[in-house]
Length: 139
Image (tube, rainbow, N blue to C red):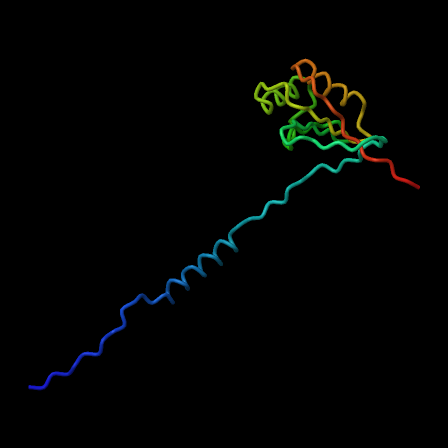
């Protein structure tokens, strides 16, 4: 009796279906992902001549918008009250009141809003306080 020899199959894994699945997953995640648009405050900073200083990375930043609303380290506050600002500052600083505090206020913001931010920082014990300005434009 004559037996046919069986053809040897290649030893290995066919990667074509695996690549197809990976591409389908990639397309699925690209289509289903929602992209969030981060909103930043547009501030018109006041002008002041002087040396340019860099903010240290550990600084706590208070942003004051033209309407007097506050943001602490990029998170907007729900109202303009002193107690809200103090609680946000103490939460962000985690009790480390020796960290630098930078107040960035719009040039058209009310003076009261800036004073309220300085008052909150002073009541909490921040001693290293600076205010952001921009260089004057040369005509």
